[in-house]
Length: 526
Length: 77
Ligand code: HEM
Ligand code: HEM
Image: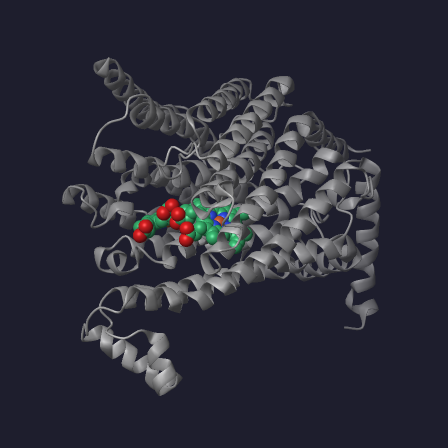
């Protein structure tokens, strides 16, 4: 073996050692996240059906819309998204610091506290003990448990960073390290100011939305972006296109995101300057978003064919593209002239899922396709289930986004003096004339549309959303089965893609050399 | 009691704000931004980029291997 081969074996072995050390805590977090994903999808479907069939399961107080909706929101945000995010963060931190995971038992305790908090919180909401503050509905004891679990993760991150063997701090690490500080800061501040010692009046709303907005931008987004910045180069074997842009993107996000929270309160009873400042912050966000978009696109340029082969790449490219779209859409939505007509409509829910589902959730699925085989030492068992997962969630999401957006725009125009409902005009004049009369009516501000007619007009879109939910559920179920199979040793061991063993790597290289020889112009015939 | 909370909230705010400024200063002083090429490469080990697939649908392994070989030949040509 020459020096180079020895070094290569060294790197492979070192990565494998780090991966092995992460297995228990990361798998505990991932397994829990999938449990909460399924629970959250169940609550989501219940909430969705209730919006078009309000009588469905309406006799049980604990399954009424007002409880099932926050149960959905909190289980997917703190259960699925945060737990999948933490597991990804733990693995990435170890890989980036190039040290095996320290104190695994401590992290398992953190996962236990987090799960206990989620259980107490979700049961609390269903029993009617919600705080009534959006994104913070969990009652106080649950919040305390979540915070304790998170404090452990933050301390662990500091300890790992302090022990790091890598000299350079890669861009993903900036994002991750910032996220583990930002989240506890947001959570403690909001608990102090809204729960322990509630401020009164308008500041309540400002603090509420400062928190909810920053949880998206300073907790979920950094983890998603960190994963993309790490996995994209790994999978396609090429460094990031412009490292300068990636660093610029991080620091401009740190500078601008925190300003934008009050765009959730456009035209609310908030001092106008606060909202204006938040709109400026939202527009400034175009800078980090465009730097990220350009960078991802140019890194992938010329490699789009690989999307056919790599599950990780498929999911994270879907996520990365959605990040650009949701953010640019968000910057537009913060303008007063667009926010006012559409704020109280399903359009906002469409944007919410474009961010939390199409960007973050898809990125987490992609990360798990890469990370889990390295934790368990086994490949994914079934290509068919991966395809069911991908197409179920991709088509399901596309349908959900389309119907919430179209339904939401119609609803918004009708709520704003369109004169007659679109449904009525179509019934009277057919599709083309009906639509043009509807738009004219809105332009001329023909007067109020009866509220019940507006609600009736949304039913078709809400039913289609339930259909999309079923597709998403099918995808989630396929993924859950894949995970169970992988953890229970149904996948093939010791083979190429996961590269744990030198013999596999050598086998691969030999086969590759053979394939290349077969394909040289003299032999290939193509 | 009120003032304790406000001191806490503003204290935390200043602490986190200062930590970001400190982070930037630390990175500049430590030369983290001095060689972008090296920074971008730092995430790929010496045995990467590699022509081995590191993530692939289980049933497309052979096809992918050929695709990589084709690319390698293209690059060589
Ligand atoms: C530059 C980036 C972004 C901007 C300027 C932005 C802007 C907005 C605005 C103005 C709203 C309020 C809509 C309304 O209530 O009328 C909103 C809602 C929302 N956004 Fe974004 N957005 C951005 C990125 C994201 C990302 C990356 C995510 C997900 C990770 C996301 C998730 C959400 C969610 C979940 C809501 C709904 C919150 C709620 O009402 O409960 N956004 N966004
Ligand atoms: C698993 C990933 C998911 C995430 C991260 C997620 C996230 C969210 C968020 C953040 C909201 C609050 C939006 C707002 O207040 O503006 C929400 C509401 C909602 N979501 Fe999801 N969701 C997910 C999956 C689903 C699925 C599969 C469905 C199925 C139909 C669904 C249906 C709903 C419904 C019906 C609402 C309430 C909308 C309303 O109040 O009008 N979600 N979700």
